[in-house]
Length: 138
Image 1 (spheres, rainbow, N blue to C red):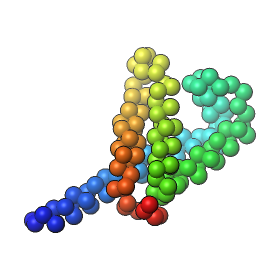
Image 2 (image 1 turned 45 degrees about the vertical axis):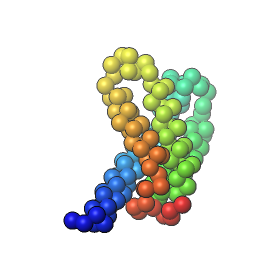
Image 3 (image 1 turned 180 degrees about the vertical axis):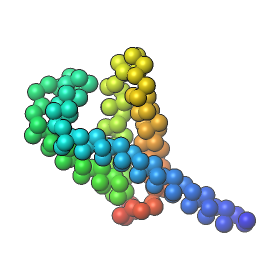
């Protein structure tokens, strides 16, 4: 293999890897977002239990879900990467760090947030290389 074909193969591998990270982060956030529509009471309990925000009614949770859905669909499409990838990273970071008691209690399920956090950081840092299956590359 010459240097050009090696570089092309590496570029293709990077693009595929970043797309798979974007797709799987989207899938997790999509389920979280759907939960706001399916069981808004659960969303209210999460706000109260992890973020100390009480009194959020079903309408507020569903509005949050609608805004989040627009965000994650734009994220999946690779649109406005600086902003959508950054906001997804921020939201996931808040969720990861607000769950600190779960780590102290050795709730193993919550530890899955850390590899996803690393994926969000990688996507944000490498956003200019994430071009596979994006709506437009900016």
